[in-house]
Length: 288
Image 1 (cartoon, helix red, strand yellow):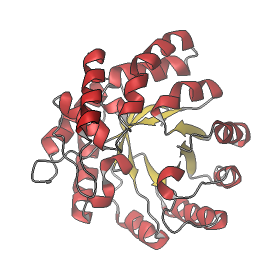
Image 2 (tube, one colour):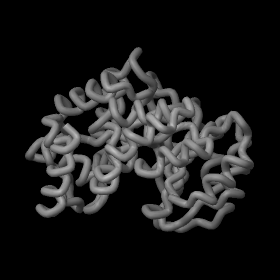
Image 3 (tube, rainbow, N blue to C red):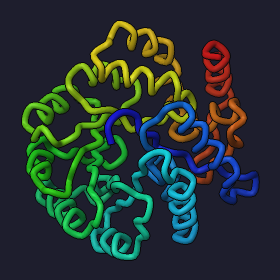
């Protein structure tokens, strides 16, 4: 789980059914572009609008297509601890090396609740757990002290930290065991955070431009920042623009420009506004 992970979108047909042909093309595009691992059904995969049967189909499809090529992590999280534990107990982990589990959202638990939630998940999971702190979506921040307590659990190997708070990143990096991976959850901050000592990124833009982005990450991990910086600034405007009108609306628009999927999202999401689409199109043409 070092280097470039990609939070895969779930492509849809015009009738909103899952487009598995496009999903296969995206997986091949990512792997041939040099990404290190794939994440199935994180937030970018529109997991909240998939049925249980659809989720099972996507999990299995991604694992089967990636088998023997790159590692895979499964997005398994929620705000009902008992339900998450039930999902883990029934899950087919063949082909999966870890789970990525988001901090509980909407309930807004206190730090002890977050700690106990993750401890129960880590105790139950047959594969290692990656914590996921994304306050902008969950409505609560996982405190550094909570993260560091969880970092000592033998089955918790990493955190995807998407707070955007550089001090929080550095406090975790300074206090965590050397074996604990700190992974960026913000594409546009990945390179400077690699300089702080992070282990990589779980990326959105990496599925559109895997060669450029994964090369940037690899160079950063090798300490070759002058070369990495050139790629960072090539992609920087696009890294910001894909989030202007929500995720995954922006990345799906760009992926449709690449011919990898249709520009379709499920309600309550809607495609990006026309002016944002035009901005993305202009930036995409500059990158080609």
